[in-house]
Image 1 (cartoon, rainbow, N blue to C red):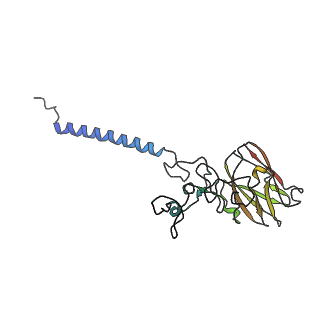
Image 2: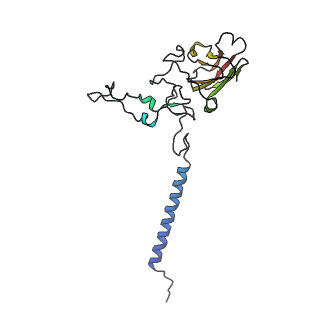
Image 3: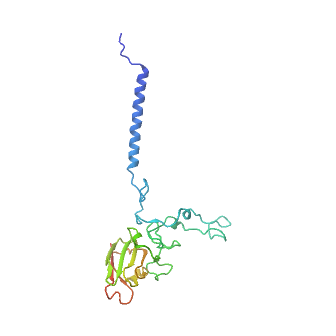
Length: 238
């Protein structure tokens, strides 16, 4: 009599092992797909990179400030806060970032804005509320990599020219590396508000949107006599 027939239980066990093997293969494929997703600018998986802002920018508001909701009016509608209530934070600022502390924030669309959430005006009067603002003195060694760093002295600007992308948010850091006061300014009236004054051995920064029109934009030290001795340069917009 042939006893080669295998017990039913053993056949069922083999089927179970096959099913478990298939499940394991599917799980490995899923894990591999997740691991291959692009990482965000903070290095975390699945986080999207915003191409409109510098990669080394940081949130303009703290997490607590970002969570602040507009104060309701008595009828339940949003509006001006009543006495004793929190001031509403514009939604545009909740997603804004900043490159250097004290400079203007940058919206998620890549537009430089005021602390009130309005777009700055590069042709405004320097230091007016609509103009991009210069920072207080900052430590030159602490500036982010995306900052365009310019040294100025009686010998001129170093570097004497730099290149930026048309329309891109740009942060300039101006450093006086001698014992003179210097004032950075562009010649073009469309950039009249982009101005930075530094005392001897001081560094300050400013954030603004580069012009949308490609070309060369000369800049000078606006202190009388400084341009004449060679403190001139140009920004190239591509």
